[in-house]
Length: 263
Image (tube, rainbow, N blue to C red; front, side):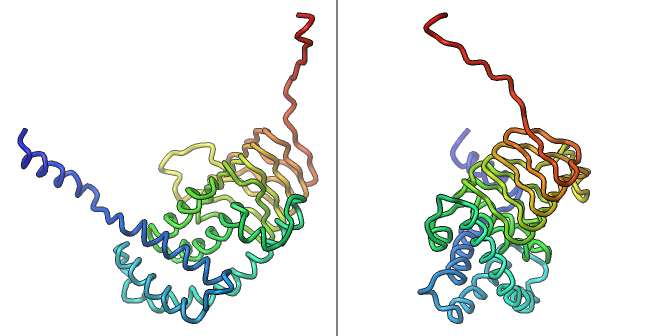
């Protein structure tokens, strides 16, 4: 096969689908700028909101969204939500600081905690998800996933004062509901029992009520699964059914210790 034929075949297949990978990179830049605008003391809010609006318009155009003409209106509504989002994120930071004995300052949480960054990008993307903006919310949370190891779908509903410790390996599905003052440790999965495509618009992921603690590597599956308020889910537990409030659930592995010298 000659070179021109190879190129022709590549171009033909490349159009299925037609992708602009610049959208991914530009979304990551937009996400960083949004984070800095809210948290960096040296980033002027007024100036950078104007820059963000321009970036947002370019993203919407790259995403080929049919509501491009309403972009300014959509952006203005989003900006109105930013003070509320920031208030929630400040509560998240306080929850992390107060619940992690290893944290030395609230500044450390904002600057160094991957769990906080993942929560921040989730909250900032969730508002875009709610208005039906294609691709961009998911690209935002996947950017956080790449940097932190935390996979939070932008469609999840997460309440106030959310605490993530260590972060790595956490998965929170699209239809998960997490209420207030919930603490989650590394490796936790809030997932679906089935991944059949016909379940797209059906609640597939668990509900976690107020004041629940879920320890490392616990797996909780199913849209009808509810973890009752004030419950503690121990490490490595596997749950596919509901738990009443004030429960303690734990995994009880059989551990044997032998003295190697006398073997």
